[in-house]
Length: 320
Image (cartoon, rainbow, N blue to C red):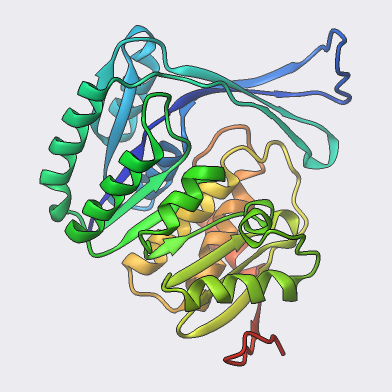
């Protein structure tokens, strides 16, 4: 494939993934270790896109003191590494899965970026981003990077790349939305924060997502856990429902969905195909403790098990 993609992870992490049958606050908990993986949202996206045959380059920051695991990952996968090395340790996040797939996350604050480090990254990254067909910006922001600086950078990025994918949460999500990225993928909780109210039904989710589309975001996808996902764009609205899965860990399932959406759009597939693919990749991801997808036969089989339902939306935003 000649398409070129970049992912940007400002605050990467090693994910320490474990399983517990019962988590007790304030007590000693015995955790079964499932793995320790170099990751972060954009790096997880890059891993899956690379497995699908896409040329991927990763940008962002990486701590000087514990970088080896990331370099091993990039060497093993063939991902092109343009991460900027800074002082300090890349954080280790703890991801605990309980029965029925319930996930408890302990996400630490991570690196602190100096103004000089940010200015260097900003200048070097903007200069080369015009060579990419699609860029994914995802995850949290490190300490030292202000929301205003991030928003200014996103506005510059929008001028240099034709298609920006954006996947974040809380204040960075709100800041990034002002720049009208091409694709966003909040989960239900993040969408409820944007809406300022609960969204208990699929119809509520679709109506809110459609409002974001009307505000200038070309593709709005929402991940709904075991309920599936929705996708809204100028071609319409769809809901995808996966089959019941054996959940080992939900870590990276949202990133897997982002990768599938990006691949479908890169390949100029239909919206139905793109949502089916991304939902299938996410469903396969929860069957294992690490993010990745190496068996295309399993992917094809899972895609056939995804149900897709179209929805009709009036211009008022009412769902039929």
